[in-house]
Length: 152
Ligand SMILES: [Zn+2]
Image 1: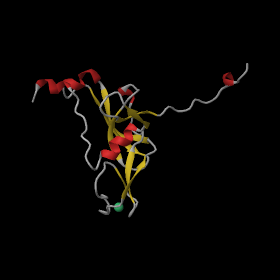
Image 2: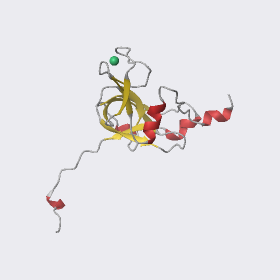
Image 3: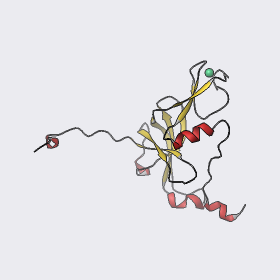
Image 4: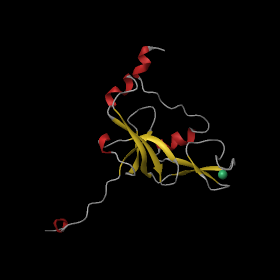
């Protein structure tokens, strides 16, 4: 391996099963496969339904909402390409639609992650070649106070 490659992050290689998924992210949509035979919802994309082996599958956009099912905060980079990112949080997100997916935290302190923390999708286009699905904490709406009165 060319030693310079160690400084480049590995990128996904879309195939016939996942091409629509990666294109969807470019449009800001996280596409999940819905089985038209049994109703199963799955991630990642495959040619068959993992529940009934049916082939009648349709892509539908997920809500983008989920919760942190599990996580790990990485302090020691797995390679030079990730050194500047540490510490960062790798998440196992349970999507509102059911499937779980590996992702990472964005727009928040990695040390602030907690189990069951509500998160929402961010389509991260900071890499020129691919849009990556990442998640940030859901900001709870602040309760209104008397200081919010308009026209004062
Ligand atoms: Zn099915």
